[in-house]
Each structure stands twice: as structure tokens, then as C-alpha cells.
Length: 423
Length: 197
Image 1 (tube, rainbow over the protein chains, first blue to last red):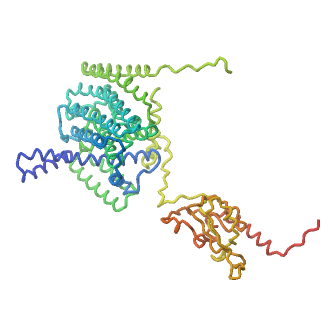
Image 2: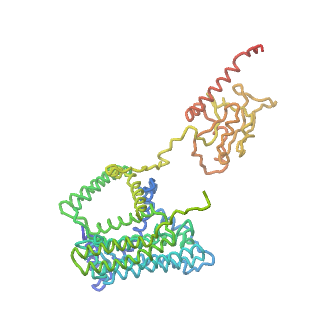
Image 3: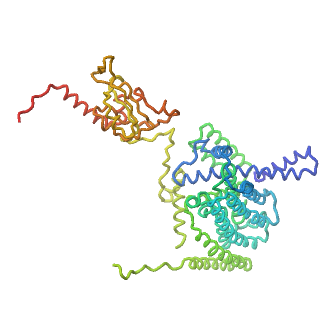
């Protein structure tokens, strides 16, 4: 089970080897990987919208999409169809070429970062030895796309949104990159596969510097992909829809696709860098399958025929997994952790109101940036002094400096005003 | 302490999220936490909301026993009082000589149309009717595809029995029935000699 997709791919390549010359096989292999990512990405994006709507709805005591298909599962398809047949409006006086180009420029880097993402053991499209650098470089292209879109729309709200977006993305790029430095220091490699291997004994999030870096990386990531509570570039109450005000139809869908893919990528990279990637405790697979039997059997919305079929399938595969002594596969661990973080993103959106621009910038420059610098020192202590004393020192340094930074950023509250001439 | 407010808020949304699932409610009760408000969505076409008795949408004409025994006498007070002027009455019905026709001892309208797209559900027609002939209905699924063919309700569409009225609005219908019975008793009784002052 663990190597299911790897084995599948190699068998397809072998099958192709019967008809194709030997030299073409690496290209077939590459093409298969690219096709898998290119096909998975839109599906991931579509079902992220469904997931987000469902979770937000439940947080607001609603049901969410439930009309199109079981549990509204066909809703993303209906939305996609609607987006396809909508009129594509380009505003008068807009820069047509740049206006049409911007959403594409937004989507392409969001797709490209998936190339260095280790989805499971041996499941990485290109294990570059500078994988992390590649991710940081490619993901920051989205600021160009946002500014292109905002500028080319010839709309004040778009431009304001784009300017906010660029300021925000560039600001949060700094703590984001600096928080990743500690991972490189400890793992000693920039390759994503190597970083995951380095977490075999202990996930980085369970170290003092790793915990701080994970928080900063994830929150900076939330800000970089313009999600609540950092969604100033598209603040509805102030600037309509920000940089994508003038977009409609499929171009708008592309903006959304870029945004959701980036959100997924941020979660996936936080998992890879700090939460152990595809590593996980060896839980027997049949436990999970038994759990899904309970879920399927108690789901009242599903027609009973499907319920019986689902229970039979789950029990059957559970028995097979029990006999084969299978553990939960690595890609399932990776996806479970990533979707856990996606849930956190949606949870933030369901809870937190939008920050003010100065609060947002203050958080990046006055809190995250100094804390990441101190965090690098803390990781250096950890590396230089192996053993408990280094860990205690690193933790104490971080707690003290975190407390100090919070104190610095929150000046003493104003004294109650005394009025001299008013009773 | 900074950040506690954010954590509290996150807990509230997580609690409401879990509280919408049976397993989540079980977990929350085991933790001793409040289970939140729970789902309040009514899945409309399958499940219909129970309306309050006073819920009103659109008027209808009341008849007793049979549809030709309608209470309306075509006095046109409601037509005049209707603020958006959505009632259109032709009548009372007359024969060739111009004498009013009567059914069950009353005159009756030839045409009685109400435009549902104009009606604003104000209930003034009900309040001004001296015969309790018009009452408010609570049926609200009134959409249609044609502005005039489907939105203008004719007399035949508006006629509904008194039993229906008693069924949808028991309290109001019993008050109306008592009033009508008192009126009928008064007219049926021979006029009493006035008491000497």
C-alpha cells in the first residue's frame, strides 16, 4: 500500500517500454508525474472550496452545500461549469494582455511548487538538492501576478488591493524565509526529501526552535496567500474584492485556484518542514478502516444500498489489511496532516476578524522578524550543545525573548484620564 | 495575557463545529463543555417550517358549505381601501333588467381578482370587510412563470372553504364564526320592543 503509486507508475513505464525505445522512457516517467500533478491540482482546489464551505457552514451551525449530489459533493463541478459559461469581462481601458496574463502567472507557480513536495515515501516529483530554495523562489512569484492583475484592471480598488497585497507578501516573505533557516541548519540539507528523512526520530515541531519556526512559517504563509485574518488585499468591506475586482468567469476561477493551491501548498510545506512530512507512527491500517466502517454505517444521508456496499468494502479491505499486516501508508499520513492544517486555515477564517494594515505590518516587522532572528540563535545553541542543557537554553531564550517582544509591542495601557473641570 | 482572546474565539468556533455532529456532541459532553447551538438549517423543499398561526401572506375568499355560497357581496370596500390597489372587483352580478342577482340571499361579485405580485400582505382588506368574507391565507409558495396569467388570482382560485380557514387559523376562525353566529341570531330573532326609558 505504501508504495502503491510508485509501483503503479513504474509498471505503466514498463508497459510503455514494450513499444517505445529505451531513450523515451525517462520522458514517459516525467510525463506521468506531471500529468498526475496537473490532474490532481484542480481536483484538490475544487474540493478545497467544498471543504471550506462545509467547515465554515458547520462553524456557523449551517449545513453548507447539500443540494448538488450527496453532501453537495458535486457542487464544485457545478461551480466550475458556471464559471466556464460566464461572460469574460475586460474593463474598458484595461491593459488587455497583462489583464489576461495575470491569473495564469498566479496559477503556474502555485502548480510548480508541487514538484518538490514529497507526498509520500519515494513520492516526490523532483527531489532537487535546492528544493527548499526552489519553493521559496517560486512561491514569491505570486506577488508579481497580484500586482499585474491589480494594475492592468485600471480600477482604483484593484490597484489598492494589489498594492496592499504586494506590501504584505514582501513583508511576510522575510520572516517566512528566516524561519526556515533553522530547518536547514539542523537538517543540513535543502532537499525536501532530506528534510523529511531528518525528522525520522523527532518531528521538528517538537523542539523549541521548531515550534516557534513552525508557528511563524505557517502564520506568514497564511499572510502570503492572503487568507483571513490577513486578507487585506481582498477586503470586501473596504475595496470590493481587491486585486480581482475586475475579473469574472474563468479568469476569476484561476485566481481562486491559485489562492487555494497556495493555501494547500503552505499547509503541505509546513507539514514537510516541521510536522514530519510523510512520517508517522505505524498505526495498523485496519484500525482506520474499522473507523471508516463506523462512519459509513452511521451516515444517514447516504442511501442504504451505498452504505451497505461501503461497509462491505471497508470490512473486506480491513480484513485484507489485517492479514497483510499493513500500516497506514506514508501518503495517507502526509495528506491527513496537510488537511489537518487546511482545517486550521478554515478555522482561522471562521473565527478571526480581519486585521488592520498597521497591525498586519507590525506583526511581521516588529514581532515575527526579531523572533525569527532570535530563533536562529536558539537553533544554533541546539546544534552546538547537543543534550538537554542546549535544549533548555534554547527554550529559555525563546520564551524570554518572546515575552520581551510582546512587552515591547504592547506599551503600558493609558492611565484612566482624570477630568479636572467635569464632575 | 495576550492571545487568550484569540484562543477563546477559536474554541467557540470549534465547539460549534463539533456540536453539529453526533460524535462531536458526544465528545463535548464527555469533556463537560457546552454542545453549542446545533444545526438550525431547515432543508426547505423536503422539510417545511411550521408557521405561527398569525403568519399571513395573501388573502382568500371564504365560502360556507359550497363555493357559490360565498360571503362576499361585492360591496367593493376592500377594493377602495387596498393601499396598493391590487383588488379588482366587477359586480355585484345583475340580470338583464339591472336588478341584482342573489345567491343564498346575497349579492355576489362577477369578477374578483387579486394581483399577488402587487399585494403587500397588509391585511387591511380583512379588517375593513363587514362580512368577514376575505381572510388571510398562509400559503406562501406563490411563484409562477407568467406575470398576468399566473400572478392574477381569479375568484375561482381565491375561493376557499371555511373549514380550510378553521384549519389554518383556528383561533381567528372561531372568533369570526362566533361573530357571524351572533349576527345571524340577531337578524333571525324578531325585533324586540325597545325598553321604555
